Structures are given as C-alpha cells and as structure tokens.
Length: 72
Image (cartoon, rainbow, N blue to C red):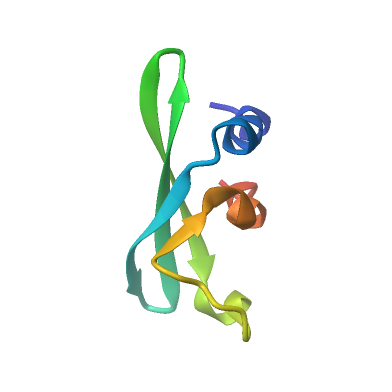
C-alpha cells in the first residue's frame, strides 16, 4: 500500500496506534486501518532519540505519528 493512501486513511479513520515494544532505542508501533474491506496493520518505527522531550504514550492518535509512517 502506498504511503499517500495510508496517510489519507489515517486522517479519515482516525485509528489508535499501539506501542508494541521498545528495543535497542527503537519504539515499534502499529495502527489498524480498513483498506478494500480488510483490516491492515500498519507497522512503523520511532527512534527514541527522535522523541526528545515529547510524550509518546502506549496508545496515540496514529495521525500524530505520520512523520514516522512516511518513512516506511
């Protein structure tokens, strides 16, 4: 699935991204979106060094993480 399609669906559907785990300075998130009558889990990574002093919670609005989804 193309990144532009993913981003559009994130804004339409407003799914919640879930933190799966953190390992070696990388946080792994996933967010479910509906695409062509199927649920697809979009998985992406956030470097802990990129987090700075921002709060990254276990459950977040996925559209807030678009910057990291663009790097799929």
